[in-house]
Image 1 (cartoon, rainbow, N blue to C red):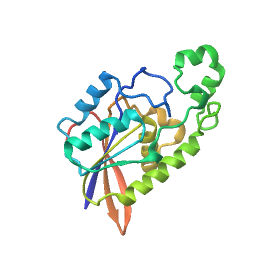
Image 2 (cartoon, helix red, strand yellow):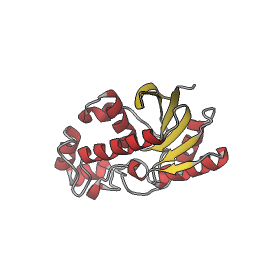
Image 3 (cartoon, rainbow, N blue to C red):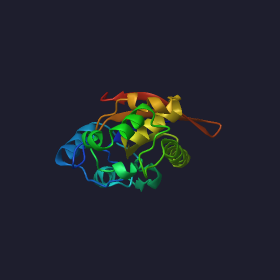
Image 4 (cartoon, rainbow, N blue to C red):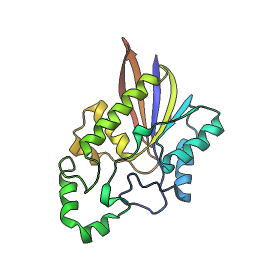
Length: 201
């Protein structure tokens, strides 16, 4: 038995690109369009999971109603907390905290934004939420999870063994869909990457 698990990053939020971790901005009009285009011709899904943040949750709620399927809000799948950098653009940080930003870009594992969540703590949180998710999933069919670029990269890090410092080398634009296949052997889930990007079934 094989489960198809689609991981869908949210669309563009209000305010454009910035360090938006726990900042709860909704999708802008373009973001809603990106999400509708991303799911067009895909599915149907048996159930939908979502981060609790508006840029994921609001579209998930609408899609679940349209498809008549259960929706589960996964609190553990929230984006990383950027602390004092929340809501700031990279350009502004380059003007005011260039040294700290440079350290973060070079070595995000050991240089956490002031007041933010350490990357290793974030990894542990997402991996724990992922393991809980797998334990609850059906062993066949299709499931959609709407989440964040960070959380999807962490899941790929976990199942593919990608080093944490290399995560930003995974291109993951707004409304990007990553497809996993999950098999169970002796009760243990084995996930593998089936597609990444705008490939269609």
